[in-house]
Amino acid sequence: MDEEREKMQEEELREIIDASDSKRLSEYFDNQEPVDFAQTVSLIEDEDELRHLLSILDDDELASLMEESEDRMRLRIARLLNDRRLLVAFEYMQKDDIVDMLGDFPIGRRKKVINLMKADDRRVIQKLLDYPEDSAGGLMTTEYIALKETLSIEKALKKIQEIGPRTEVIETIYVIDDRRRLVGCVDLRVLLSEPKDTLLGNIMEENPITVYPETDQEETAQIVSKYDLMSLPVVSRTNQILGIITVDDIIDVIVDEYDADMLQMAGVSGEESLDTTLGESIRFRLPWLLVNLATAFLASFVVKMFQSTIEQVVALSAIMTIISGMGGNAGSQTMSILVRQLAQGEITLKRGLKAFRKEMELSIINGSVNGFVTGVIVVFMYHNFYLGIITLAAMIGNMIVSGIFGFLVPIILHRLKADPAVASSIFVTTATDVLGFFIFLGLAKLFLPVLI
Image (cartoon, rainbow, N blue to C red; front, side, top):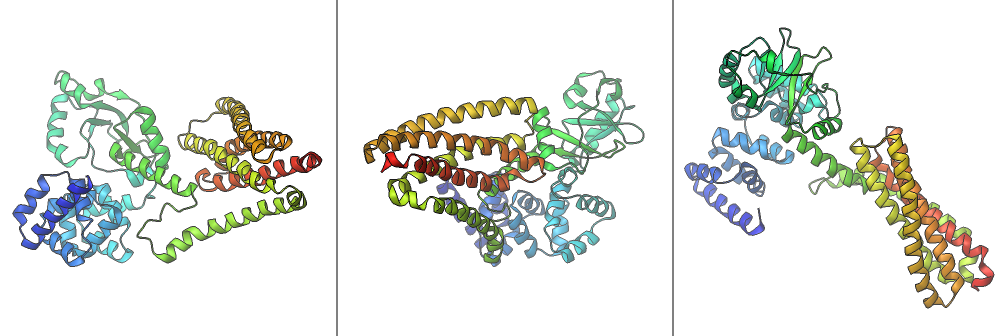
């Protein structure tokens, strides 16, 4: 929503709350997308006002609000609801959304709410909660359609009509044998176009793509993206279907992983937000700042090694920051591409070697162009041709360094099972700073007689 419309929506909602008009609230809810409604509700900061809104919302509207709200808002809402009202709203929610919400509850209330559930729901919810949140099992929903391969299309359509309203996906029908092992899948469109006496086993696509419940969510997202799937079945080691993962959950994973990677590349935890407490922000940021401080001292030590050279040619102190800065920028470009490719699982040995050769060629070209421009400016500023030549050579050298480290560091960290998005920037920046200073100042010292 744009800012002006958002403000109008907020003002209208506050008027409805003040008037306690449940009928008008239902009309207001029906006239916009649930996610927009949730966004407007999130603007309400007063707890009493929010509590009053929840009291006049219908149960299905409350369920929709909780499904579409961010995690912190969900918890705010849950704190203002008693257990009975919460359980009624859960009746309208998908099981995976309930699990996501309960996973953030304090342990005491989580157990209390689960114990109040119906036995069948309690068993399903508890099973889903046992899976790690960032795994395929943690993402999956148990609300899907699985029919036996011996069913005719006519009987299958009757089953779909009966259980379809309670499932999250009906476009894909999963086909199982007598032991609930997944043997195939059928598109609903195919089902509607075949003779009614045809058996599901005769029209199904065999060997559907599957994942195990412990599969990491990032790997799961890559599979869905690679094969353009609308849903992905989760199976046990004996190939029994346990649940499915829908594309909307995969989109959330992709967004979350991207956000986390971008924050971690800046040395910020993916768990931090504007609402994080001061203590938590210190815990998330300070360790990385201390690591960066240590690497800064390493670069400073290199500069100190050439202190006498810098004292004799003061211009070096101004130029060397350009060399190291350009190397850092180039290294970040290479590193960002590598981190992205590694996240998508798209790097093979053959492809990696080819890309590395290209990166070296690119580093030489970029270094030559930037070094030439910088060198020309340096010659005009300091009236020393040799200082321009040294600047050109150092720029090319540091660009090559940035290409090597920007390419290899993420790959090495990935091989060591470390997250390349978290630590790559520190190592790449350190390399371009330290080696950039060393190359430039080393060349300056070597050709010092022609610089003075």
